[in-house]
Image 1 (cartoon, helix red, strand yellow):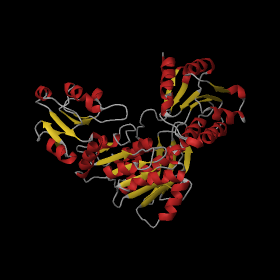
Image 2 (image 1 turned 135 degrees about the vertical axis):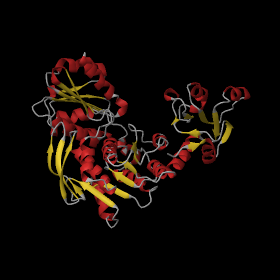
Image 3 (image 1 turned 60 degrees about the vertical axis):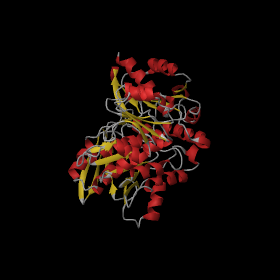
Image 4 (image 1 turned 30 degrees about the vertical axis):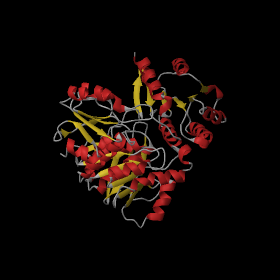
Length: 465
């Protein structure tokens, strides 16, 4: 187990030790005074709307053993009050966080699997980490803490783990590059190139460029890509002389292909040839996209020489992060699918396809806006409307400024009496109370800012009473 000492922190961050024993070992780090545990080192990160360094005393009072702050004047009286603690002053706490995580990563000679993509990062991370953990003690990103703060803090959680699975998110150019240079991955995964954040980046081709930044911090990595994605397939064809690239897919011939696929609402089953052996895989979550995600986990598992039986077990026993395809049964066998943590056209399409697999059930889609689509917003919301009708959804309920385009397109093919456009969440709840029948299935899906996951939870709580 590699622990940082106070003197390591001071040296790596070019900081100044105001008070404290330089030989004290620092095991846990936190940026949130509301989640401080005894013995933590609090990092006072400065954001656009707040300055975390201002809360250094609260952190110490709540049990932190020390703090890292920037631009704070600390009086002799305060130093005397906290003389048994550690206070380190740095020029920039965010840059200090990057430097600490980079240094901590350098202490570990272990597999580091980095995962990015327009959609499916979190579920793929869950599947991959479940497979990797069959052989190695594994640390993974919690939830979707995949940004320039969450990723370094994840690395700083390393203790005696033997492998690390990291999710990498981005909104703009340069963000994945930063994360990759901190994490220095040994295996780089790109799940797909879709339309998420296309309003910021301008085109899917630019999104591909931004995702490929995952390679910039890696040295001769194994590269795992979804070969069914059009842009990734094209990139592979242009770079396939690189033998470190491993592919997976359903449609295109790949290193790992799913055959004889059986899709059900509750899960999927398929066959895959691994090391010349036909392996039957059962995925415990519905949706063709989870078949692809599990194929990715197979590719990573084989890159790490994990036995086929353990890969199979890792996939078949994996647990999905909350608010991703959570299916809850409430009164009268009504099923509620809470997949509302985030949304893009691609994930909307995948979720509607899952909903369509609930045979002999009335299917209700409650959909909201997708964000960060810029000039493509109208077009992509209209395409969601097409997917609603392609998947034979019985009732459509929408809310949000741009979801009106979903409504408009759906009206061209659906019975107008089964389409509702509502402004307020209370209206949605009232409508559902009136129209929902026994054994209906209801999907909630929208971008995170719409807070449809809270709406789904309210409906569940209402009907569980």
